[in-house]
Length: 347
Image (spheres, rainbow, N blue to C red):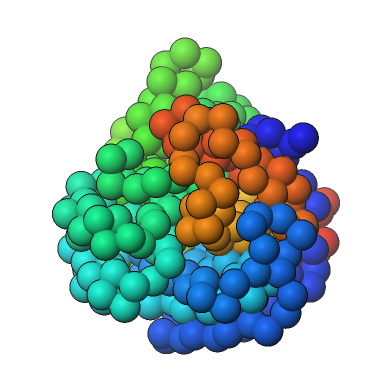
């Protein structure tokens, strides 16, 4: 059995191409395919609602497309709904509507660990299962958290990467998403520990927030470079932020002088790797993340698992997974993307 430490290193081109077909508006589809070879069998009554942090975000387009594939394999109904902007309270109305419509499960990336807690609790009380993915809530508000990679692994990859690029000394800054984003804050806390322990000559001088908005992130990058003229590197652990920062750097006199790394998708970062703006960045397969979250939601919905530690379920093409401590299921380790491999990926 492949356990929660399973590494996802090779991405299926077909599934990844599907990821880009999801657009930034609400949508639903019903699959007529036979049940998957994994959890509990297919069901025409299975109805899973994906709620990303915000619509129109390429990362969530890819992850939710993976969820759509999984739900259709299981013969259920998939839908994606959500806010246009990633704010703490913006997801509540969509949670409430899904519960009122008796969705089998909600799969949600939380904009805040607490702000949506009451809505999720009411959804659970009405019989709807709750799976968080990418960004967690406090554990009492959900049944399972599907984590893209260990927080420690994600933080270390980015810190070690930027340290290597700047010669392990100098000033760096972090361009994050929303100030309340659970995953971002967990990674940043671990980055600080890694810097102190392993890179004492690398100094974190600022952390700013682009709110997962392209223009805001672009402007924050410009402000960082103006505020900190000796800046040697930027870490942006958000797909929107790292692409916006790369876009700014690519046409500025800081190109090649200020290193940039973070979490991004190959398609959005390819041009910046090829033109020398970015040497290396990191991510997991978001399509597989959504796919795994959908299978976990289906297993909860049909009673195959309850979310307790030690529960196991089959996630279609990804194989077997176990639920770890605090109801967490781990997809795998992050992958490094650079000029040597970026052309191999399409998402």
